[in-house]
Image (cartoon, rainbow, N blue to C red):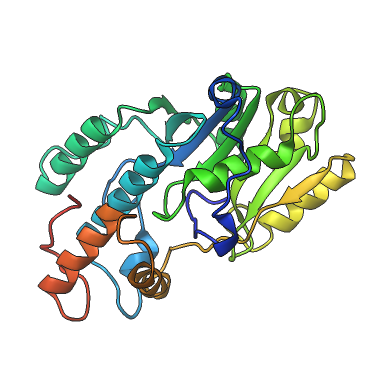
Length: 283
């Protein structure tokens, strides 16, 4: 897994979760949304390099737009949602920037449906293991925040692939990312608490490399765990990725990704080639 990344695959439209029993699912299924505070130089740094690069300020605004869109869309899911921050969200927001002040206000007002926790220390694997183990659902999942197209159907499809407790299907569900990582991991919390399970899934993984998915899947198979794969997802990490996202948004439902759409429209208005250091943050 990376910190981010989701593209809504055409096959993601039908949710695996039925309306019946949705109230029970709210208690049983718990999702951690991994993200970072919107600090220049810490988020979307690859967006500031190469052709079509954004300014550091615009990269912060893009990160925030993605986060707000993901959280807005996941608020309609039949699961609990916890936002897991790479550091304390309040302390890490610089107070002297108008954009960061707007970001802080937006996260406060847009976050009514979510709980908040810190990820703690260590690499991404250490933090994934810690946060997932602390969730109180029977079935738990982790996702990243850097793709505004993620929707509840994709997450619920991951939980459905695990199956009910009395008729389990998969032990671990992975949402492959096109770059070789994974954008979602879902499993039963009871499996994670087995001796050696967290180490097998998360320790000594070369995070942010094309080998992450393959290594994780093989480790699961080595332990005899059944693995289910969701449709492949696209990461949005580079200016080229952002150009592809623009094309998808132009062809998609205009009601989705409203923060990202609004920001991109303002960047386009400020600079014909996309991106302006003075562009405002997301609405």
